[in-house]
Length: 402
Ligand SMILES: Cc1ncc(COP(=O)(O)O)c(C=O)c1O
Image (cartoon, rainbow, N blue to C red):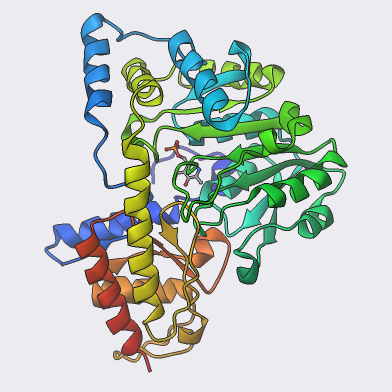
């Protein structure tokens, strides 16, 4: 280590478990080992052709310079149109902004508002970054664990019990990474009724998996279900998951203008602006044809059915049927305490995923990383034959434990 001293705030955050697992899988592959990686949260579909063309044409037109920190006017208008068309949410120009991924907007919102002693309610299982961003901002994450019987969803009673005078935010992710839970209209209304009684609590609605909802379930935005919450809700979404654009780094949100002004100031100082060509691409994605979206969702639903069925045939695993996103989150309690053929005891879900990877060549992520054990997460955004092979390996791995 060099003599450069690292600031204390960096000790509050960790590298994400999913990138550690993916990195390890890549290294094993590079060493010639046969590994199927189901650890990373990105669609395997290519970015649509017309979106790539739009980026190329924008670059040729000279759209290669800094843009407004909150997004180009054209992209912001496309975001306004999207929220109106798909979510019934009306925003003005100063009530939307674009970020370099939804992740940046989460960071902007928390760092702009959270101070020492402030609490942020994070329902578990949760997307890993919520906890780290809250801690980085100096706040305290208040984790409320969902029950499997309730599809891992936060209930109004749990929410009411978790709120204190110090609560600043509720982070609500639907469809959820990693559980795939989708909050229905009446469930959002139940949570909204609690929130109406606590005006100090803002809502960060992470809707990045909005379009990946199965079994004809209706997707609902909390700010539309309860319009009285709109002026304290940040509704976040992005191009990554629905348009297979993870590498383009474009997210966006709608929310109260005074907060977005501060978030924009932060972006001005940190990234200056979002990528100009990526914004042109995302603009084409939002305003162009949407016919491939339901096709992709159907394909995810077919893969979900395959993976859930195969995992439920594995000894010791119980996999519920998620309603959205592209993850399954099986329970593996029956395998904890068992021994591998090499004689190693599986003490927890981290040991189990290590065993899956090292002995059977399948990379997934331990539930502990999402605040809930004993579980693990599989991202099934992969080709069907790969999924089949991975699930067969997991079945063999589970059967070999004694
Ligand atoms: C729940 C959730 N929210 C937000 C994001 C961020 O996506 P991006 O920064 O690519 O827009 C992800 C990505 O994995 C996610 O799973």
